[in-house]
Image (cartoon, rainbow over all chains, first blue to last red; front, side, top):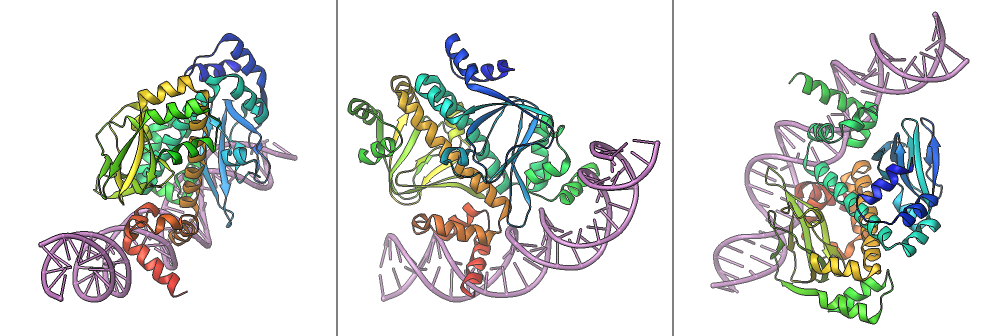
Length: 192
Length: 192
DNA sequence: TAGCGTTCTTAAGATACCTTAATGGAATAG
DNA sequence: CTATTCCATTAAGGTATCTTAAGAACGCTA
């Protein structure tokens, strides 16, 4: 279970065997059933989270009660309400399991200890965050310059592995359209 | 000129006097006239850039020739086509001075040296990138859940210092609406 | 101070996407 | 296995935003 996590780290930075052991000891597993919450709006987010298995979603609910999915997470991805984690303020997002999932999480205090002991942990999270930033930036550009149909097709091309794990109305929420509209988009594509 | 840069770093992580000197030696100033480019699409982005003075914009141009502004940068902000910088591929974005500006930039090779010599530099960019990620995430949520008028008002509340340095059509591009539409939004607000 | 390019405004018609509502099929719980 | 809830589809009418076009205001520069 920890292999995926350690592999994820070693992919980007070198760590020693001892450091690897220390890291593993700092994470604890969380088992989630389908639809179970890992975090709810209003709670404090004191852990960094790595998805070992399954599929989860990060979303917010606006004043009108509508759900907006910011991010999906599958095996090998990190997920968090980063703002809440960093500021130690109550979360504004929800994190919920879409399928039965296993998450490895580390408490902020443990992680801060690792940051002080292991230079490469700072580097690892620097690079990870940079990559996440770039991906989010590209999504922003796409949502500004592309039609819903183009965004749908691009999502399919890039994340077919996620598309197969989620219901269509969640993809609609991620793309920023109504489920009805996504349905007509798909119909238009079918009809060429 | 370097005071703002060093202050920006010391705000987040502790560095020694020697390290501060080393950092300053690694950055070089770039002076930009109004409308001058710091980076153009197709070029390689080999520097991390800190805006010491002035106002610049980071934008892309889509297939239809329309400009989409991803980020403004003013005094004290970092700006880059991070994807191009990290992957060493040709840039897809432009960075252009809106007003006469001074930028402090560091070459990737120098920065990588700093990362190896100074643990706190990795931490500094980790935290900076995390903060940038959180800000971008909030912008994403806003563009998904709010009307153009709400986004305009929120921008005014948050970045009035930027709004005063840029023409309105650039703000329209940043908000993801046409200049004409922003104009009618403003009219509606005037008329209560 | 005149002239010219740049930016902002206004308005009419077009379009992408939303809202609501109804239906049938698929998944899930008892 | 059946009832019930959840999910995808379709369609009609509505709204936010875009496109196009024109003129007005602003700000350089000669």
